[in-house]
Image (tube, rainbow, N blue to C red; front, side, top):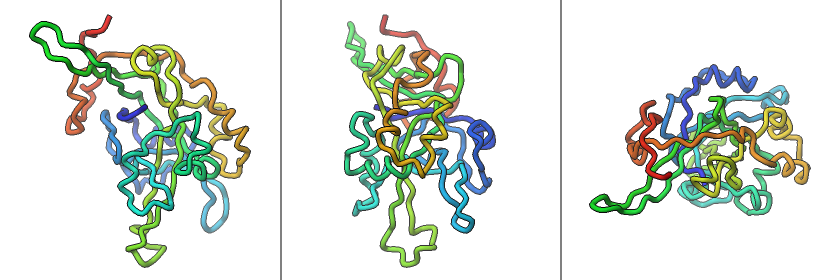
Length: 246
Protein backbone atom coordinates (compact mmCIF):
# COMPACT_ATOMS: atom_id res chain seq x y z
CA UNK A 1 0.00 0.00 0.00
CA UNK A 2 0.96 3.66 0.08
CA UNK A 3 0.06 5.38 3.34
CA UNK A 4 2.52 8.29 3.37
CA UNK A 5 4.46 10.13 0.71
CA UNK A 6 6.42 13.31 0.03
CA UNK A 7 5.39 16.08 -2.35
CA UNK A 8 7.64 19.10 -2.07
CA UNK A 9 7.65 20.60 -5.56
CA UNK A 10 6.09 24.03 -6.05
CA UNK A 11 2.75 24.13 -7.90
CA UNK A 12 4.17 26.29 -10.67
CA UNK A 13 6.90 23.71 -11.28
CA UNK A 14 4.35 20.88 -11.30
CA UNK A 15 2.13 22.77 -13.73
CA UNK A 16 5.08 23.24 -16.08
CA UNK A 17 6.19 19.63 -15.73
CA UNK A 18 2.74 18.21 -16.56
CA UNK A 19 1.79 20.99 -19.00
CA UNK A 20 -1.21 21.80 -16.85
CA UNK A 21 -3.02 25.01 -15.97
CA UNK A 22 -2.82 26.28 -12.41
CA UNK A 23 -4.92 29.30 -11.58
CA UNK A 24 -2.93 30.21 -8.46
CA UNK A 25 -5.98 30.29 -6.19
CA UNK A 26 -5.33 26.85 -4.70
CA UNK A 27 -2.08 26.64 -2.76
CA UNK A 28 -0.49 23.85 -0.75
CA UNK A 29 2.69 23.98 1.26
CA UNK A 30 5.50 21.59 0.44
CA UNK A 31 5.06 18.39 2.44
CA UNK A 32 7.52 15.65 3.30
CA UNK A 33 4.88 13.75 5.27
CA UNK A 34 1.67 13.64 3.26
CA UNK A 35 -0.93 11.61 5.17
CA UNK A 36 -4.44 10.33 4.45
CA UNK A 37 -7.15 13.05 4.41
CA UNK A 38 -4.51 15.70 3.61
CA UNK A 39 -5.06 17.95 0.58
CA UNK A 40 -2.75 16.83 -2.25
CA UNK A 41 -1.89 18.00 -5.75
CA UNK A 42 -3.54 16.15 -8.63
CA UNK A 43 -3.30 16.56 -12.40
CA UNK A 44 -6.60 15.95 -14.18
CA UNK A 45 -8.49 16.79 -17.36
CA UNK A 46 -12.08 18.05 -17.42
CA UNK A 47 -14.27 20.02 -19.84
CA UNK A 48 -14.62 23.72 -19.07
CA UNK A 49 -18.13 24.51 -17.80
CA UNK A 50 -18.63 27.37 -20.24
CA UNK A 51 -16.64 26.51 -23.36
CA UNK A 52 -16.68 22.72 -23.13
CA UNK A 53 -12.94 22.71 -23.88
CA UNK A 54 -11.09 19.86 -22.19
CA UNK A 55 -8.19 21.33 -20.23
CA UNK A 56 -5.47 19.77 -18.12
CA UNK A 57 -5.37 21.34 -14.68
CA UNK A 58 -3.48 21.15 -11.41
CA UNK A 59 -5.97 20.86 -8.56
CA UNK A 60 -5.87 20.32 -4.81
CA UNK A 61 -7.94 17.26 -3.78
CA UNK A 62 -8.38 15.41 -0.49
CA UNK A 63 -6.56 12.08 -0.21
CA UNK A 64 -9.01 9.27 0.53
CA UNK A 65 -11.70 8.65 -2.08
CA UNK A 66 -15.33 9.15 -1.03
CA UNK A 67 -17.73 7.44 -3.47
CA UNK A 68 -20.58 9.63 -4.69
CA UNK A 69 -23.09 7.29 -3.01
CA UNK A 70 -21.39 7.33 0.41
CA UNK A 71 -23.52 8.56 3.30
CA UNK A 72 -20.54 9.74 5.34
CA UNK A 73 -17.34 11.25 3.90
CA UNK A 74 -15.38 9.66 6.74
CA UNK A 75 -15.19 6.46 4.66
CA UNK A 76 -12.52 8.17 2.57
CA UNK A 77 -9.91 7.59 5.27
CA UNK A 78 -10.12 3.86 4.44
CA UNK A 79 -9.96 4.34 0.66
CA UNK A 80 -6.53 5.83 0.18
CA UNK A 81 -5.40 3.01 -2.14
CA UNK A 82 -7.03 0.99 -4.93
CA UNK A 83 -5.46 -2.26 -6.11
CA UNK A 84 -4.66 -2.33 -9.82
CA UNK A 85 -5.88 -5.92 -10.05
CA UNK A 86 -9.46 -5.02 -9.06
CA UNK A 87 -9.82 -1.23 -9.43
CA UNK A 88 -11.99 -1.53 -12.56
CA UNK A 89 -14.60 -3.72 -10.84
CA UNK A 90 -14.82 -2.62 -7.21
CA UNK A 91 -18.04 -0.61 -6.57
CA UNK A 92 -16.15 2.19 -4.81
CA UNK A 93 -13.80 2.76 -7.75
CA UNK A 94 -15.23 1.46 -11.03
CA UNK A 95 -17.15 4.61 -12.01
CA UNK A 96 -14.14 6.79 -11.30
CA UNK A 97 -11.89 4.39 -13.22
CA UNK A 98 -14.12 4.78 -16.27
CA UNK A 99 -14.53 8.58 -16.08
CA UNK A 100 -12.30 10.34 -13.53
CA UNK A 101 -8.62 9.49 -13.63
CA UNK A 102 -5.72 11.63 -12.44
CA UNK A 103 -2.02 11.74 -11.68
CA UNK A 104 -0.67 12.43 -8.19
CA UNK A 105 2.86 13.91 -8.24
CA UNK A 106 5.24 12.66 -5.55
CA UNK A 107 8.92 12.85 -4.69
CA UNK A 108 8.66 9.33 -3.31
CA UNK A 109 6.78 7.30 -0.70
CA UNK A 110 7.35 5.67 2.68
CA UNK A 111 7.06 2.07 3.78
CA UNK A 112 7.89 0.38 7.09
CA UNK A 113 9.68 -2.87 7.93
CA UNK A 114 9.42 -4.60 11.34
CA UNK A 115 12.73 -4.82 13.20
CA UNK A 116 12.76 -7.49 15.92
CA UNK A 117 13.91 -6.81 19.47
CA UNK A 118 17.59 -7.41 20.17
CA UNK A 119 19.05 -7.44 23.66
CA UNK A 120 17.69 -4.39 25.48
CA UNK A 121 16.42 -2.76 22.27
CA UNK A 122 12.68 -3.00 21.71
CA UNK A 123 11.08 -4.11 18.46
CA UNK A 124 10.04 -1.27 16.18
CA UNK A 125 9.17 -0.50 12.57
CA UNK A 126 11.91 1.06 10.45
CA UNK A 127 10.66 3.58 7.87
CA UNK A 128 12.17 3.73 4.37
CA UNK A 129 11.82 6.44 1.78
CA UNK A 130 11.47 4.92 -1.68
CA UNK A 131 12.01 7.20 -4.66
CA UNK A 132 13.26 7.29 -8.25
CA UNK A 133 17.04 7.02 -8.27
CA UNK A 134 17.34 9.94 -10.69
CA UNK A 135 15.29 12.30 -8.51
CA UNK A 136 12.48 12.72 -11.04
CA UNK A 137 8.87 13.13 -9.98
CA UNK A 138 6.68 10.05 -9.60
CA UNK A 139 3.38 10.44 -11.47
CA UNK A 140 1.27 8.07 -9.41
CA UNK A 141 -1.86 6.81 -11.15
CA UNK A 142 -4.98 7.88 -9.29
CA UNK A 143 -8.74 8.30 -9.44
CA UNK A 144 -10.90 11.14 -8.20
CA UNK A 145 -14.56 11.48 -7.27
CA UNK A 146 -17.14 14.13 -6.36
CA UNK A 147 -19.24 13.82 -3.21
CA UNK A 148 -22.28 16.04 -2.65
CA UNK A 149 -22.90 17.27 0.88
CA UNK A 150 -26.70 17.20 1.15
CA UNK A 151 -26.65 19.48 4.19
CA UNK A 152 -25.71 22.36 1.85
CA UNK A 153 -28.69 23.57 -0.16
CA UNK A 154 -27.19 25.17 -3.26
CA UNK A 155 -25.25 23.20 -5.87
CA UNK A 156 -23.12 26.23 -6.71
CA UNK A 157 -21.97 26.65 -3.10
CA UNK A 158 -18.28 25.57 -2.93
CA UNK A 159 -18.98 23.86 0.38
CA UNK A 160 -21.50 21.56 -1.32
CA UNK A 161 -18.82 19.49 -3.02
CA UNK A 162 -15.92 17.41 -1.75
CA UNK A 163 -13.40 16.19 -4.34
CA UNK A 164 -11.32 13.24 -3.19
CA UNK A 165 -8.69 10.94 -4.65
CA UNK A 166 -7.06 7.53 -4.27
CA UNK A 167 -3.71 6.05 -5.37
CA UNK A 168 -3.59 2.91 -7.51
CA UNK A 169 -1.11 0.35 -6.19
CA UNK A 170 0.59 -2.65 -7.77
CA UNK A 171 3.12 -5.35 -6.91
CA UNK A 172 6.39 -3.82 -5.79
CA UNK A 173 9.48 -3.91 -8.00
CA UNK A 174 13.18 -3.26 -7.59
CA UNK A 175 14.20 -1.80 -4.22
CA UNK A 176 10.59 -1.37 -3.12
CA UNK A 177 10.03 -5.12 -3.26
CA UNK A 178 12.64 -5.62 -0.53
CA UNK A 179 10.67 -3.35 1.76
CA UNK A 180 7.01 -4.00 1.01
CA UNK A 181 5.00 -6.17 -1.44
CA UNK A 182 2.92 -3.24 -2.76
CA UNK A 183 3.82 0.17 -4.19
CA UNK A 184 2.15 3.09 -6.02
CA UNK A 185 1.87 2.57 -9.77
CA UNK A 186 3.72 5.41 -11.50
CA UNK A 187 2.83 5.99 -15.16
CA UNK A 188 5.17 6.54 -18.09
CA UNK A 189 5.10 10.10 -19.45
CA UNK A 190 4.00 8.73 -22.85
CA UNK A 191 0.82 7.41 -21.19
CA UNK A 192 -0.25 10.60 -19.38
CA UNK A 193 -2.52 11.81 -22.17
CA UNK A 194 -4.42 8.56 -22.62
CA UNK A 195 -4.83 8.06 -18.88
CA UNK A 196 -6.13 11.57 -18.22
CA UNK A 197 -8.41 11.81 -21.29
CA UNK A 198 -12.00 11.86 -19.89
CA UNK A 199 -13.30 10.69 -23.28
CA UNK A 200 -11.24 7.51 -23.16
CA UNK A 201 -13.62 4.87 -21.83
CA UNK A 202 -12.22 1.61 -23.23
CA UNK A 203 -11.63 -0.31 -20.01
CA UNK A 204 -9.33 -2.86 -21.63
CA UNK A 205 -7.14 -0.13 -23.13
CA UNK A 206 -7.11 1.77 -19.85
CA UNK A 207 -6.07 -1.30 -17.91
CA UNK A 208 -3.29 -1.86 -20.44
CA UNK A 209 -1.81 1.49 -19.42
CA UNK A 210 -1.35 0.14 -15.90
CA UNK A 211 1.53 -2.15 -16.78
CA UNK A 212 4.96 -2.42 -15.17
CA UNK A 213 5.46 0.79 -13.16
CA UNK A 214 7.49 3.58 -14.66
CA UNK A 215 10.68 4.59 -12.94
CA UNK A 216 11.60 1.04 -11.99
CA UNK A 217 15.06 2.16 -10.84
CA UNK A 218 14.20 3.00 -7.24
CA UNK A 219 16.24 3.61 -4.14
CA UNK A 220 15.12 2.65 -0.64
CA UNK A 221 16.71 4.75 2.09
CA UNK A 222 16.31 4.14 5.82
CA UNK A 223 15.08 7.34 7.46
CA UNK A 224 14.25 8.57 10.94
CA UNK A 225 11.21 7.25 12.83
CA UNK A 226 10.20 10.90 13.19
CA UNK A 227 8.14 10.38 10.04
CA UNK A 228 5.84 8.15 12.10
CA UNK A 229 4.18 11.28 13.50
CA UNK A 230 2.27 13.53 11.13
CA UNK A 231 3.26 16.43 13.37
CA UNK A 232 6.79 16.17 11.96
CA UNK A 233 7.06 17.63 8.49
CA UNK A 234 10.27 19.04 7.06
CA UNK A 235 12.93 18.06 4.54
CA UNK A 236 15.08 16.46 7.27
CA UNK A 237 12.66 13.52 7.35
CA UNK A 238 14.48 12.34 4.21
CA UNK A 239 17.91 12.38 5.85
CA UNK A 240 19.37 8.85 5.79
CA UNK A 241 20.01 6.89 8.97
CA UNK A 242 21.94 3.62 9.43
CA UNK A 243 19.99 0.76 7.86
CA UNK A 244 19.26 -1.89 10.54
CA UNK A 245 18.34 -4.50 7.91
CA UNK A 246 21.21 -5.99 5.90
